[in-house]
Image (cartoon, rainbow, N blue to C red):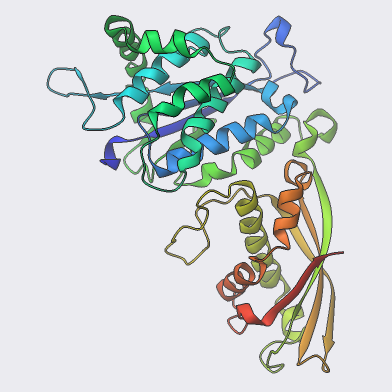
Length: 377
């Protein structure tokens, strides 16, 4: 698969609103408060599959957040530079044709009225259903699943399939879609980073930071509402949980209460990193653990955590040089209300993720087998 020819870009422009309410009235099609979410893509590969999960799960989190978004997906084809004809290079041409017709019928980028909140959620659901299960691995989605995913997404398979098999019709649609190429390439610049490419308010989210799309949208909404928490979706506010865990079988000379207290910022930073990956693994679990150059568990980081505060440190000499820790975790309501994420934070990956993050922040003496008894309190 030629990755240099694959791209998937979400381009998000937030239009500042003078409205004092965050609720969008679909009936009057008032776009002043909206966030334009534009997803450019050709074919598919492992990161693009994961992007399908991220986009749908973000829009589906909350009706109010979905109302804030104007979503458009633009599947693009390859172009022969010699004659301008469409080429595939062995890639998923049938997917591009099908998805070109899909967006033309349900969420056409040139028609601002074609993609209401229901349609955009259905189109995003199709992408997750068809591509999402293949996240983070090189694979080609099974085309026989297309009809099933259309039905599950409340979309008309026969309508789109007929279009995809109409040579003249689909070529006209692909031609219109490919006219969006030049502006996209201009925005990417000389160092585009890894696929897929995402823009928020014309700012390029380099490499894989698009995995935190919920956080990005919430930050934009809060900024545009002057951090007035009454005027933003509740999922963009925050809440707190408390948990405890223990270090045991440690050499007290290498790690003790005084050392932690004197390096509390580094200690908290390590916990935030670990908890973000634990949350990410629960929210986007498909083939989550990927080999990263820095040794981190994955490139997928939803950035669910606002802050961590250590509220109690007790040393227990009778417990094999043990240290008992209590912490308060502040996180987005979008993830606070998800029991899988809360349970995942204190799940079986806690020791390994914390050991990695502690070592990454200067506490090399902490190993996975030193971490025990993580639990909510």
